[in-house]
Length: 584
Image (cartoon, rainbow, N blue to C red; front, side, top):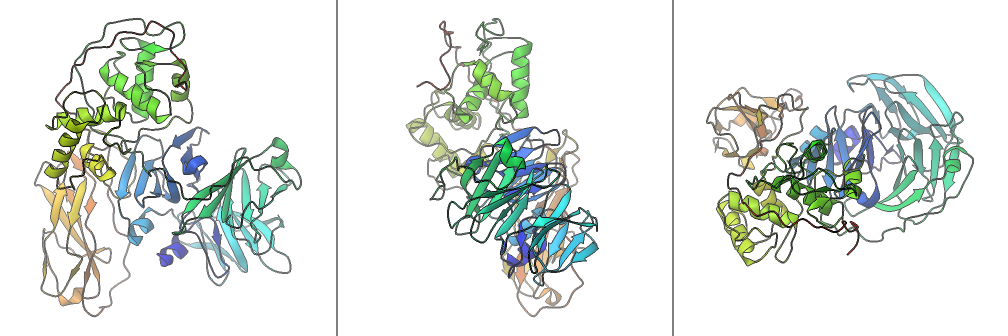
């Protein structure tokens, strides 16, 4: 893992004996910027300045390419977030160093233990220039920023892929870390105080922020917020506190702002989740009574029809909520999606969409749907109703579809868990929900290109170790409905030219690592699934330098639509004005 860190880290690198964090609290590909903010939630800013918020507990940003962002949850899962916010794929439930290296951003600089900073071309393949005596470095969308040592430390910058070094000003001694956004470079000094250098100021004005604890390890400035982070025992980032900047603090002198968020002393206890799009979309047949699209108070009610309903549906679909089409009719499917959105943003679940809810829905920070929020016996609400409806569609009867997690739902869920080989806990945990809602597990890839095709997903397992003469036979659990599979074996990331489902281990493979990639010749499927690594026992045989493990392009994840259709009667329409979303 440490070897990967020294080669793949592209921001926030400090070389004072080269002590670094596992990844970054802010990351960019030159167009999109993502950072960790309030409650360790993920914030993603697109080139138009629109911010998406993924309300999941994220502890590290691992990498970003042209289409996806890769991040780690507090639970240790590696997720790939589409940059358009449409979906999140589970890359690995237990990522290896190879998984993390594959997901890492293309580096635009490297900082060695000898203090030599190498500025690379934008593709990361060759060195443009080298700067000696560098003790810390980071990047934003346009520049690499770095601190050079000497009689007095100085902060400098050079354009991405360039060689013209510009000196900005003085820098603190013994910096702990430094990170850059489009707004500012933020440096954590040796005494845990912060120096914020305003990049929007022609004079690079700096601001001073007093230390709030001895645990502050990193800081990021975005907009009018300054976020401070500590490390947990695994060197993952935990939000420690937030400063709200005034306009004066962004572009003048040395200031000491007031900390507006209390430092959190403990690790957050919220269940870490990700935000994949649920692919099982329950359908119903009840046809609601047609009414006007909106009431005078701005709400949209169950049974409404029209363009405003269609606009709401399109936005819910865009955010990944389980709604298969925008037909302009506020029916059962729409009501469930609305309630799921209401619960996600902390509102009361209602049979209508209030004006306040709609304002959040159409805002820049509307959260995408997370199907992996766990529910258990005694819970109630839209997520339980989604669970019940999906269980019934798969042939496991939870009884009345009432949104109440009772004994019948527990019995149905336990039977489902038994049918797929999971522990029969009766708890809708992450592993169960992944299978129930058919959330795909994929490798880091580029963007989907053909929505008519289905991503090949599942697992391929081979022996973790082998010796000469042993035959490796993979165990497959794939979503492909065809036997027309293509097998490609790799040794240390390089294809060995074997296209059969089994592989006989030879002596020349001793000391190397084998891996199998499975694809399909069926035009309906695209993508690839890799097996775990198999280490071959014996003495290492020299081989040529391995190349990067090839990947393949997946498309949109499959959408399994349950066929059983509940038909609950529409409830009586409320006649009073809708209550506040935040009242009890």
